[in-house]
Image 1 (cartoon, helix red, strand yellow):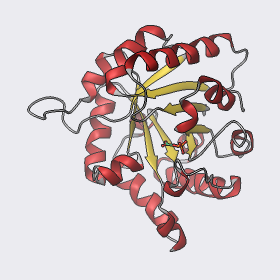
Image 2: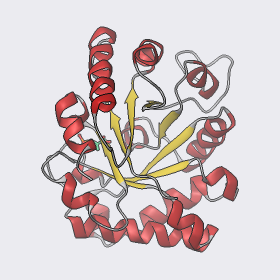
Image 3: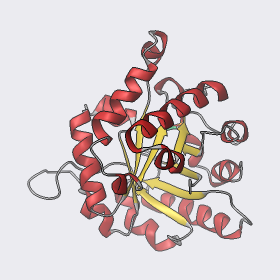
Image 4: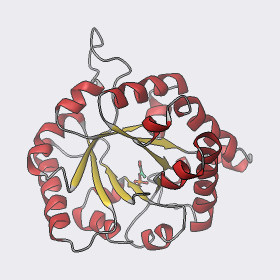
Length: 252
Ligand code: PEP
């Protein structure tokens, strides 16, 4: 069965005490909410994972790291591996965010390795893909998405695939206030589901959760989430205030 998910991506925001407060507020709001139609996940900086884990009910609020290393251990100063993330009690990792691809040169091959190590460590992966404005204007949306997904994920087995969530995040809509229209987003989501169906079959494609990300907020979430192939959101800016985030969580 396909799951709806709303996941926050705090990026490099909040100190540990601020993050703990925010996580508590989200956890309390989720605990009090009646009849939620989606799973809730918060993606937090590495430094926050252990402290945040202590103040949430992991059965109600999933916990994600925003990245992990492409090695499991060793002489990689400053890196944090998937087993380290899993040892905090986190159950998800966000991989392939356009900020990681763009600022830190994460390649298809590197992401493929990160995905493998994350799955091996028992983490679920929220895997981001999305085109730039230039790529959209050049009519390359489908080529870009196909390459990002197939090069880093299509070596997985159907069983492994059950731990993958896709997040479509057009780069031009991230943090810009410009949201893709419902129809623009739905078109790409349907394309992604089609790609998954070609590779893994219709049943697995139907069961795959595909999130939209890019300036999603309480005011535009209901229309986006009403589309048949949009199963929730990956939320940046609006995940930094519990009330805004909950406004999206309750948008289904
Ligand atoms: C993101 O970075 O994953 C994101 C969707 O950001 P925002 O919601 O701020 O556009």
